[in-house]
Image 1 (cartoon, rainbow over the protein chains, first blue to last red):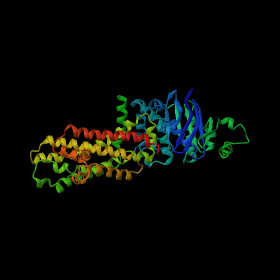
Image 2 (spheres, one colour):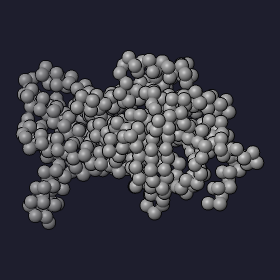
Image 3 (tube, each protein chain N blue to C red):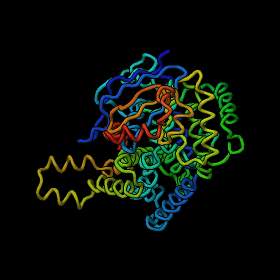
Image 4 (cartoon, one colour):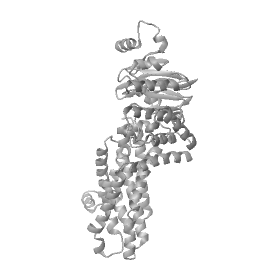
Length: 239
Length: 248
């Protein structure tokens, strides 16, 4: 089942073309790895997919709902972790998740249940009453994931979810993404190529705002002589 | 409509309780109470005047709000933009107007709390004499409306920068201009070269002129409409600025 259909997206800031003609299709059970060098347009694309930025041209449909025409309805199907996992640092973990859940329209009883699940599944139980400001980077990232998942969205968009985490935390995060990917569509932007190999069913490589490669990860890795690292360097360099 | 109000209230609650999560609320309330009492009793010569009214209390409000309202409102949007939470907030299923109104109302009701805490002065004047409580009530209402104007202007200006200090300075200067527009000295200097209608227009935009009328117990429709319109204009510009500047 198709969850997200973005067609021919364009976005420019002044004279700079941040995104040129990018199309993405996301289905249930699919994890798309969004790769690209710094400034390639990954974050801009994600911001457009989540409705934070308006597109200059192109269309985005979330479960057949036009994001530009009915943004409130379309946004309700998306869970989003922005780059750097921003959160209200003066709130406790629990009150922050409660706030996001309420904003997502969850009723009290369901919200309590989802809170319980999130705190348990994302290992936040021991810090639930702690002020977010006092948490380590790993925990802050987990809080970001928890807020993105609190309403059990069909689509999850994660902008560099493992950035700055230690190897153990990265491993845990990947395990979590894999475990929830069965009945959702996930888009992850990352710099870490091994992450794409580990969790993504499809790989999209972009550079200078354009899609250079859009293939199933297993097909990319078929050729034993090349790994994702060498392919990434080859196509982003020639561009 | 019910859903609109529900979301607005969630934003309102987060912002309003946010003032109490840090020492900001206590510091603000303390400073406001100390300054308003100090100005009333010492500079306003409350006892020496021997009159049973609160003119010496309300006369300082425009000048107090000039500093204190930007202090409350400077964080409303500047902080969201600096910490990146604006991205989180605006990808939630919520409209810009709900966000702007929720935030503004939280700061406005926080100010109401501060104003309510000065009621012992009202009780004192009733203990000492027989004041016109209707005039005092209207003055309280006018003071709160004027605070709303200062706050909506500050909220609007806090959207143009990520730096809270800059937001504070720009807001204070803007509020100062809005107060000074009705000051005799300014009007006299304008009157010397400008046509009468322009002087009247400038005076009509002054917070001070409108507040002075209220202080005398005159809350006419013009003054009420002026304060409410000012708030609505600033909020509308704020909503527009949120759309325009959110990703900068």
